[in-house]
Image 1: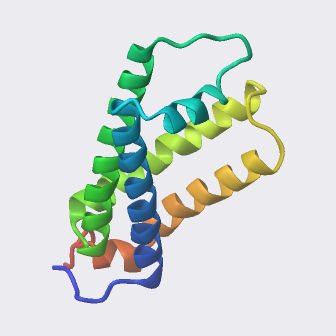
Image 2: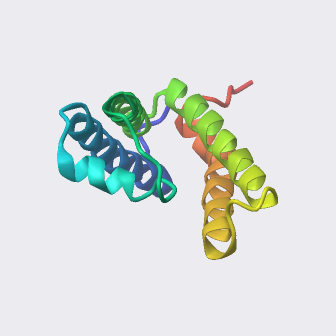
Length: 143
């Protein structure tokens, strides 16, 4: 049984998912359409001297588009307190948390970026695991 009460933290997570989903979807569309500004921005993140075929930008654009649309779907699920959104947000945040730890211990992520990433994903997993939040999503069964 779900309640109509959406905790503030869920609204915050849903809003952040919505923003990231919109940005990724737009970037994906720009990359798929061959937008030179989007491509140049992506080229700047590549190692110096690396050349990238247009097919790489197309595949990256498709990936951004898919991930962006999934982010929009997840945002909808968070705002409407769907149980599947709770499950998938826990899974995605947990994978991101593990990825940050791997990046940190392999030397690819350091300093404030590592700290903030660990703190954010850790807080999301912790917060979603609390009883009031699980109850809001209908994930706690009453006896």
